Image (cartoon, rainbow, N blue to C red; front, side, top):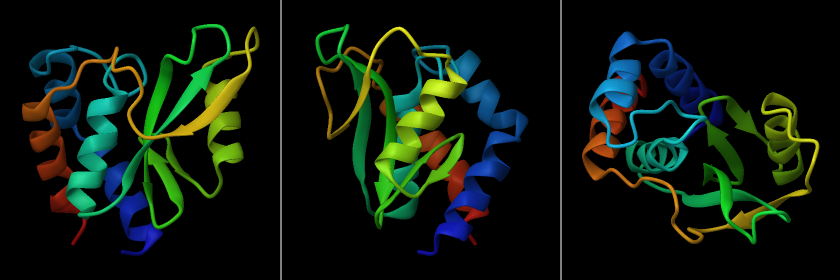
Length: 135
């Protein structure tokens, strides 16, 4: 699937009220895509697209604990902040957006020590929202 189509679907979904209601009011974490529900959102992107793998940002201060999750699809990393063509670009964007200057952030593949809420129902619901925009 083309990255511009995926990016447009993510942007469209991000701007829908239903997305925020699902995350903030209905999900287990009751959080947004950058403050506790990033794993759910990354899994939803992978589920909607039909392929991809989890990637994460970890830091040297928290013993490898994930700070943020994304979805890598055909070499492009997606989260609800949009696409990043390289791990370096994705990590830097995260550092700037979240103002993380007190620790080193590193890129890693896969699910880490799962300290973030994993909500299969929310994954399915968000995936369905994304699917509506992937046409």
